[in-house]
Length: 315
Image (cartoon, rainbow, N blue to C red; front, top):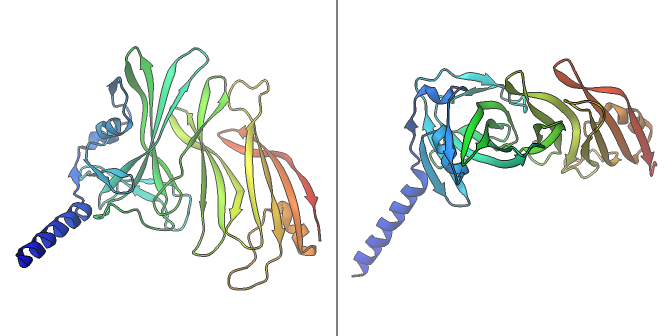
């Protein structure tokens, strides 16, 4: 009797482990990468179910809210997409070993005329048989789908399976909606990464529908710094409401503190904004504020004028 009971436990344990680790790939047609696909979703709109229609692989719901679609496209031709980590180069998508796609965000917004929209963003990572996301310097590859409400139906207006990769361990940060003009909406993403035990540096990215597709139109460096015993800073931004109808300016304000490192294993000099480098040559510590303005110049936002600097508690 005891032996039978132990055998039962063994079989159940083996089955559970297999259920948790044996993630299968489903081959899909290369039409999934067609940015001109037509898709209509009836109410109620469900983000996960909609993602399944866009990427019709195998759906898995594992522990810790780990829900994803596992798929492979043998007929797809991989394309290079920027990974802002810059460590392992561009990401070739769809991945040769298969793809895990997760719903990153489901954003609702309404324009001034009362039109309703949904912006879905997706996180792609390389297939893992255990359903894990790995690679410290591999970003999550972001895809975007935009829907507009027409009666009781949501119609897909634009679709980009992939745009760019950011974040760490194949996980992109959640994009946030920002209005940058009259009924002109974009997404901001704050990316940060760093080595084990080292400071994490943050960058602000702006993802905008431009010339028929979503593109990165702004990168703000030195947006944040944390996990350093000697220095840290953070930033916020505002969109300038002036006479510009579209692509309004951004004001980025960065505040923080600097303290000269002790040159120990855990405390070493950090990479400073050029506006602080001169002060750091002669002073041991200080608090600071940097105000920068960014304007669209051609096809990219660039800093305009000189940054405004304020220092305090200088020693």
